[in-house]
Image 1 (spheres, rainbow, N blue to C red):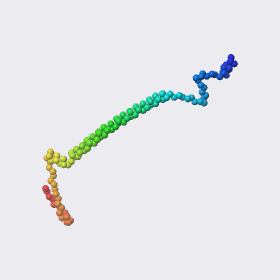
Image 2: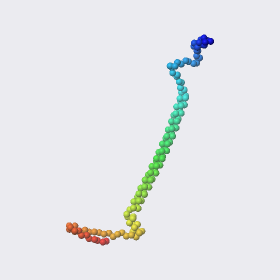
Image 3: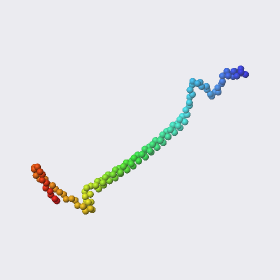
Image 4: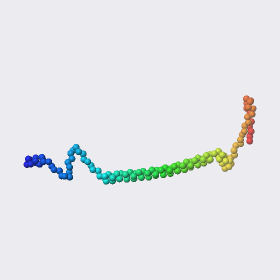
Length: 131
């Protein structure tokens, strides 16, 4: 039996006609299905288009918010300017004096005028005039 098994091993095997032998040094050639490649690339392009549309929508939303904030800032600046002018009007000395004389019945102090005469003399004499 040992002799029979040696004969069987020594016999070269026959390969079916649809198979071919590939040596270790040869690389396998991979057949690429162009339809599968087309489908995958279509999915990638569709995903990129959706991403671009979402990005564009987000950009437009940020632009609208920016414009609304600019309008709010301009309104706040205008209100600040109005408040500053109202503050200046309320703090004006003429207004304070008019309220003091009208509502509080206060009178303004008399004005005093001074005349200096004898500029050339060492001692200046003052004259006091009362109005």
